[in-house]
Image (tube, rainbow, N blue to C red; front, side, top):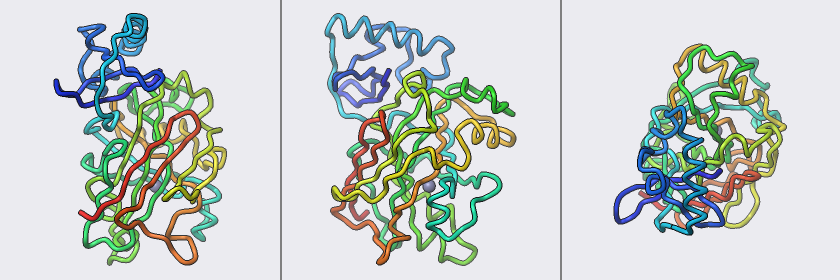
Length: 285
Ligand code: ZN
């Protein structure tokens, strides 16, 4: 099942997506909450969503609207650095012995077709195609063997990064380099975990203005999704709707010779197998 959030003249709606058609889940089952984060928090959320979607598709009752970020204002946007063997090599770094974890504020999260806005003070802004895990259940100290039960699904993400702030400021301003508003495009929808049988075997691509810049696979992940959930939840309680950006493969603009950085008028597309295409134009803020 593909779940998305759309904006309509009547407000935001959580929808099931099939063949580019949207079913308003609340219309089919008025007891369902109008936000994906709340729906994930319901124990019966997916079961009821499935039956509401079937009912809606059978009846042909479709709704139209603009796709937004699937999870609006997640409580946490957790990111993993240097998590691909081939990207660590490209960066001239040793693969880390434990996951490298950082974060973005929730204002970074935007949806498909929304603009990545370049702050005038950032001059070296880069793209990073990433598999994003959406957490479906509250949990702390989750054993690796149970981690899969906490995954609601997956989506495309772009961990947009201002390298000049991340790496060249005194003390390295990772937070400010990673967290300018709009620097976490996600979507176009969440694909539920049952439709992604192996998150460790998905092609990951990023195109910049139609040219393929990143082309790898999650087989290169140093720490798999279940390890990341176990590792982070030792310290942090994970909540429904939390996002984990799992790291990026090689081909980032910073590592190219000459380097490539985003400029107004560019278009980024992230495409992970089975998750659709996440497309975002770039503008100056
Ligand atoms: Zn990243």
